[in-house]
Picture 1 (cartoon, rainbow, N blue to C red):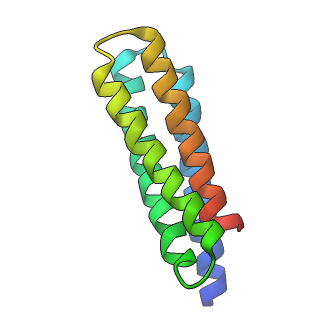
Picture 2: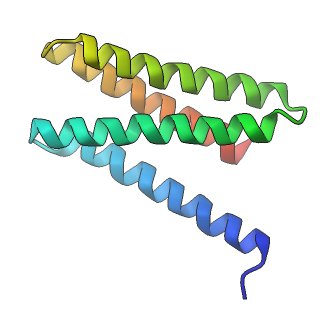
Length: 113
């Protein structure tokens, strides 16, 4: 029988596993469409995890709220940069790096602070 803490650990490990898998596939795959799909997954996970950090931190942890808002803004900025890149490989790579950093920052904000 799972307790609430056991369920929290399972969900946290699932989010971390999805993060690791999507980040690795976003950078290692050769197919551009697959890279784009995993980029969108990374952006969505970044926004989701940062909202988790925001909801946890809103009760009184201002550092956590600031990190969560920064991660959400970075995720949205990476999405906008990817859409505005117009096929420029350098801008697409920068957008992927920003999205990866935002996701890692969101994970830190939600689960480790």
